[in-house]
Amino acid sequence: MKTKDVKILWGRSGNRCAFPGCKIELTPDSAESSLGEMAHIVAESPNGPRGDSYLTCEERDEYSNLILLCPTHHTLIDSNPEEWTVDKLKQIKREHENWVSTQLAQNRIFVERIDNSSFIETQKKEWAKFAENYVWIIVSITPLNISNDDAINPLNRALLNSINSLKLLNYISYSEITVNHYHTSPNEYGVVNQDLRNIKEGSAHKIQVFRNGHCEFMVCLENILEVDSDHTHHQNLLHNPSTKILFYKDMAESLSNQIEGLINIWNDGLPFKDMLITAVMTNTTYMRLYSGRKTWNGYELGSPVSDPILQYSKVINKEESKAAVEESFIKRFVNHFGLNIDTVFDNNGNMNKPGKLY
Image (cartoon, rainbow, N blue to C red; front, side, top):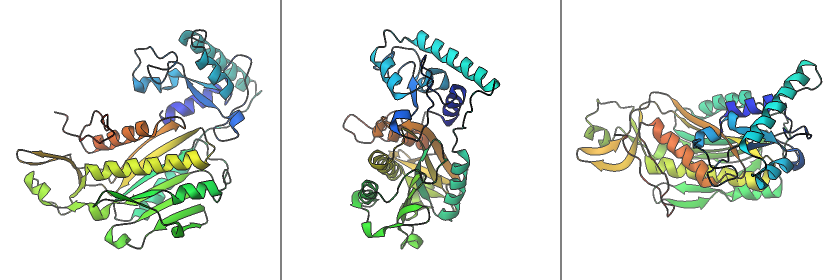
């Protein structure tokens, strides 16, 4: 889901369950009993309740196909789709939003704004400052509403165990190592695990969990980049000493590992039903992506990137599969580099290679 669609849904629903006669006030970040759930009118997948539709995957996640419900009534409509049809749910949504508009006009209800945008923008500035001139991939998950600096206890044992079980990738051997738990400690924001000792060689990581529920997994990739390598000369490019070549496999493996790690933290120790997941790559100007394919005249590279920062974000539900989330982010970053990939993972879970669109 796009952040814009989420904000519209919560705002027009008045942070209340749309089911007739309910109207219970909801929140995206509190006890399970009052958590708001963004239910799909036409199911998210064709196999779900009310899933038979011409709508695309993207259209199924848009505001027009979402209705805000409490957990009880979300379960009710999905357990009996024959009664709770698409047309009936759309009518319920219209009537509820009209009710909210009337109540707001008469000052009978107050709607707290569901927003995390200012916090995210602040973090993006901090990431750019922290990265300096190095290439980092930064993945974060953020509650939909940042209103409580003490939303979680970052030192609870389940959360610490989850942090200390995260994996770091060795990009030479493509092996995994577990983070060193001796690098985990409290700090002014919550709890952090970081190792910046080799940052001058372009190798470092930082994992930060904030008391407000925001989490970041940051990995420096500078040491595995090819800088002005033979790959560029095979393409007859103008010599540019700033050109950096990133291997697709390295980028995809890193995104996959970071996303999986943060979702594990979410499942193990965070109470939120929905989160905004964001991925950022820093210092990408002139960078190109090597697809892993060879062509008749050299190596298949994507287009040089003009922006210094690449980014993508979307709202995800706790029940979404990790593989689906990883696929959407890897696809988007492949597109950022002028390449395309139809399916990231094959039937055996192995990664396919991207390529030129034509």
